[in-house]
Length: 252
Ligand SMILES: [Fe+2]
Ligand SMILES: [Fe+2]
Image (cartoon, rainbow, N blue to C red; front, side, top):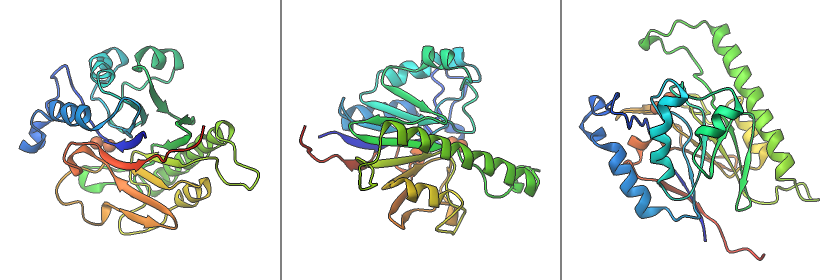
């Protein structure tokens, strides 16, 4: 039976222009180690969620090598945009040319694979990151989060069309939400996003963005009102895909 995995924030730079080991020795050759783990664990019919910060490329043309890396990995891939994904094009034609086969980049859209519905959004910081020189005002933050909330709703609307509910109102299969930023503020268990994720009927919400050894309360994980939240940034999970769920055998 297919499985669903997560491995986020690959921060690929196959061109070699942005080596990651400046962030610590544990990042050394991380793309090679992730490839080996991915190829060992993931079956060709599996799904890997990689919600953002996929590539350091600034333009679509610069991301070609990173997508070749992804194309060489087994499985279906689902992504949302991270804050570093400057290569992400607003035009569907450019994105279609770039994306490797069976790769889905969600933005106000959704996809169903093996009867599982995937939706999500980028999300954003819940407060300005002043220690990194972030000078956004409270209104800037509010505007950003409001836009992301709207995009999450549009993504869910898109999912409802291709993954229509049964007559009893329940989704026809499992649903999984992808976020780049943590969908919940540090130390909390709910946010403006969580009622939407819950109402969607999602069992899991996978996110990335956070890096480093001491994340403290920023790394919100656990099961809240039926949704299990997990940070899947590659350095948080040993640079190996983490198992999110195995799909049961189902008739037909
Ligand atoms: Fe990020
Ligand atoms: Fe990242």
